Image (cartoon, rainbow, N blue to C red; front, side, top):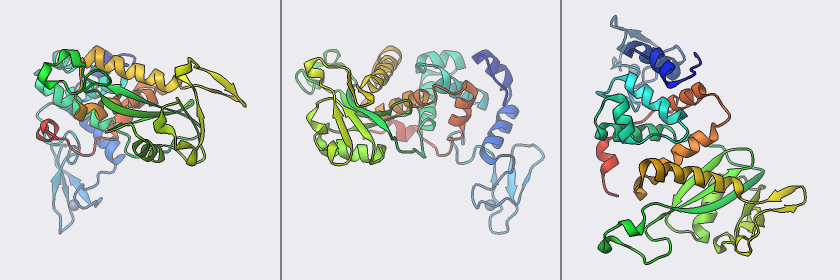
Length: 308
Ligand SMILES: [Zn+2]
């Protein structure tokens, strides 16, 4: 794929539905179209270039490259989808739906839905386990109590109506996050088992929820309450600076761009931030290709806006 130096260059390249479709077909099928209904490669392309037909007797389905993807049945042109995907996958802080609406010339509601569906694509569907030295920390993210009407305020002081997220980052590697209902031993242990290889070294602060971590991992703690931030041990440093750095990026994104995020959507915002963080060392075009290769599945507006 061509290398783009700017959003403008990207826009110039993917300037027609045909070009976007061709790229999507390539990404999805590597040049050999397969029927999304039965998997057969025995398919033919209609002369309009967009629609395929499955030749299998029992199937005979018609389909295009967007069937079964986030782009299925969309009224928004693929050129706009591609541009929005590029911005979300590449732009260091993401983009607000208001800003995106202006860029794409769509309503803010459309941009909001678009933004969320792309975020869905930025989820890592085949995650590998973290290993080596892994920093773990929890963070409280979300609405400010003081901004809410009195009757909507939940807890006095403390973490208020903020949502808890646990994060783990491999030194020099990737980050993983999970929104959890409560920071307790059970939630922490379950999440860490999903995230981290058994023989790893876990570095956390002194929070009591990490008290059982040593049963599965080699556990080192840094005592923030005693104002201890870095300690040298054996041949590595004990600190949680990397995961704290990630929280800073995430909070800047949420507070600076989206202003507030509801608990039910928070995981998608975490995924978006993690997607970019985990691809910080690769080229922008590759990040776009990575995002696009995850376009399977749909996310309906009704589902997105439904109450939990
Ligand atoms: Zn078929």
